Length: 233
Image 1 (tube, helix red, strand yellow):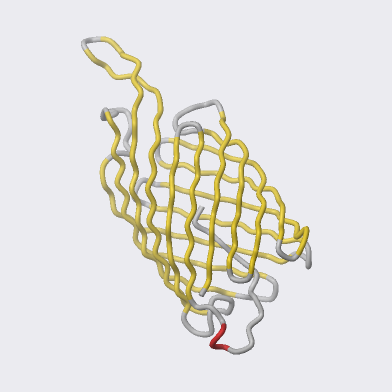
Image 2: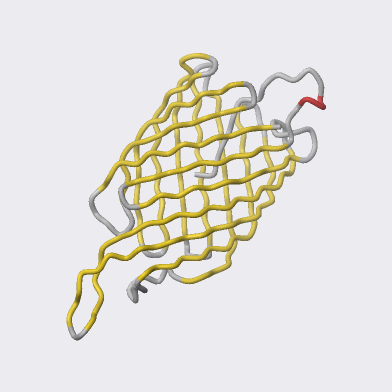
């Protein structure tokens, strides 16, 4: 998801502390693929200190699922192909009490869901505007162990997402861990579980994760893979 936390690099002067973040990612399963891109800006002393910040995010995805259409007096098995476009603008504040980082955001979102053929039994179709709430947390348990938990909720189609991770720093620039989460909207609920590997090089971070997830409007789980890239300036 659209949540990234990273350890702050050392800086020789305040002018060297990054204020801008760019992030992008891609995720795929057996019946969907999606990508996102976003940017954020931190006011005040920078990304690693308490203060206000702005964030914008855009995403696009394609998916399909099997269902039925009532045609000619009978129910006909049908495959539905969907496309989703998404955008959000948020304002938030970062708290930094000790080893804990907490980011809270609120803003507006717009989402467009287009399904072919139109599914009369699926209410998640068309365009909608709504409010977006987002929370991201990070905790350095010890020099080697860390934990994170990110959640979001949007009113456009009652969509929600949550992801928790527990990681271990094998080396200063390499981490491994486990992840689990939930996601859904007003039409479905799903979960996921797997592992991740993360590499940090100066102000750049790459995370590769994968495991098993429940699919859109399907009962049997499938595998998923996701990659996220994060850069600060």
